[in-house]
Length: 156
Ligand SMILES: *[C@@H]1O[C@H](CO)[C@@H](O)[C@H](O)[C@H]1NC(C)=O
Ligand SMILES: *[C@@H]1O[C@H](CO)[C@@H](O)[C@H](O)[C@H]1NC(C)=O
Image (cartoon, rainbow, N blue to C red; front, side, top):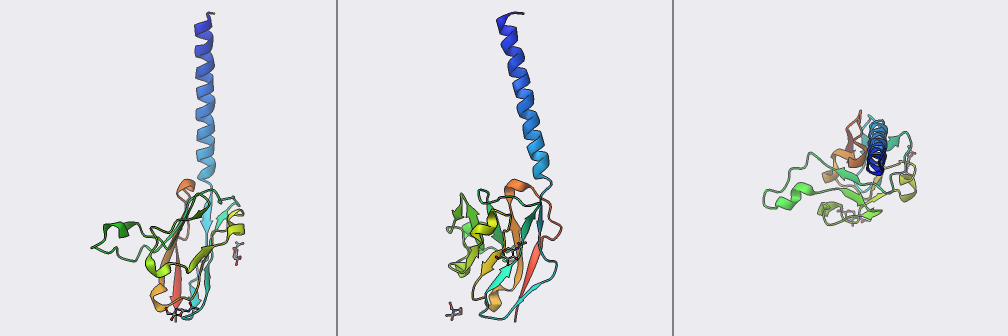
């Protein structure tokens, strides 16, 4: 067996192992679910609320991207950037605020300690009637299936 043939075999098997690993990781990622309550979260104007949501099984998501949005809010037709507006966007271990809906600035937070346990619950302070609606949480990296897609917040 020549040297060339030998290294060729090595690289083929290295590639195979790499692909297998990627496949297994993909497979594992498909098994995560985002859990939340099927019941609406009820609040009174001025309250602080927690929209509960967590990853099952437990997973440290502190290094991942977590997106909280409100799919019902219609994008502002005069502002094409508003297509990408978030209630709360967490990326690279901190909050990204340049795509944040103005009415939520300074009012939302994730639980930093909770993220390491897969707790991606969102805290909203001083809720108003305008906050009422469906909230969606998404972790793009997990490609997870959610049984319960939205959390309904009711404000009276
Ligand atoms: C997530 O964290 C919030 C705030 O600490 C807490 O109220 C909630 O019970 C936690 N959820 C889980 C599933 O641990
Ligand atoms: C809560 O929101 C109301 C109306 O937006 C505002 O007038 C009030 O100052 C806010 N309270 C706090 C504690 O931020």
